[in-house]
Length: 336
Ligand code: SAM
Ligand code: DTB
Ligand code: SF4
Image 1 (cartoon, rainbow, N blue to C red):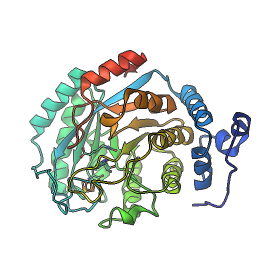
Image 2 (cartoon, helix red, strand yellow):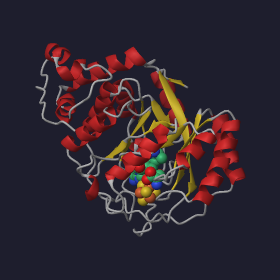
Image 3 (cartoon, rainbow, N blue to C red):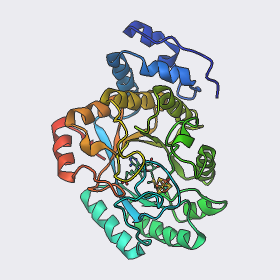
């Protein structure tokens, strides 16, 4: 990636409007320095720019809701330092077998009745075995038949597996780049950052929509964050959906006590994602349950337009549904 083109950090609204970073076309490539320049803008200029981009591409009062279900929990062979489902750490998360199809379908029905439009199923695998993939394709078929959009996150895919998922009617595959390629091996050693990109390429080639984002709070620098955003933005096209997770410090994981990311830095990341990926759905993901209403409102203003709408994420708690209703009512947001 070309990181050599430095862009002066805009210091006034006039300068920001004229900067390369602020005026880039949606299909243009972003250098890391240009994304970093966005982060360095005065917050009000950055928010203004991000919100303007948001309004040009989306209804700013609409937020999409997906439900999430862990269909296979714990016992994962990978060593992602943030994850409570890794078998390598002594955590409170037990190991559970792959759920039965009928149980998944009944959870999807409940999610639909509560208003979710997409149902995401997550499995703690390095990647699915053929037999496991068969069961998941059945889940996809039945959830899809309920009239819900479907999403799965199953780890790395082998040749031919994405095609089987597409055939079953899968709409989205979630596979996060998680962090900057240069920082990746500080967090995960059992697979490479390039493995993640391979799976994303297979998903895209099979005609499935890509959901890919990352986590903040792993000990990465601002430069690392900017590099992650630039990498996502430079995908051709960028992911349809971009989850931005705030680390949930899960007890027993190496990152349990990691330093929290400053709220404004998190908001800047949402804004940078919105500006660089104007047409993508930006999802305010893990860590939302400890954000104040004001913080969430700032994230929506900065361009986040999708959330997980369920009491639990995969294993960690999420905001309860009633709190979401109250906030949507206060902000005049419409759930879609
Ligand atoms: N095993 C699959 C994989 O790694 O892609 C799917 C499940 S994995 C739990 C899905 C995503 O959840 C990860 O890529 C990561 O971004 C996010 N995640 C996991 N643990 C988290 C935590 N403690 N805090 C925030 N996000 C987390
Ligand atoms: C994503 O980016 N975040 C979700 C979803 N994709 C699968 C998962 C968040 C997991 C939070 C930690 C847990 O529940 O264990
Ligand atoms: Fe396994 Fe995914 Fe957790 Fe990594 S993030 S340990 S691959 S479940």
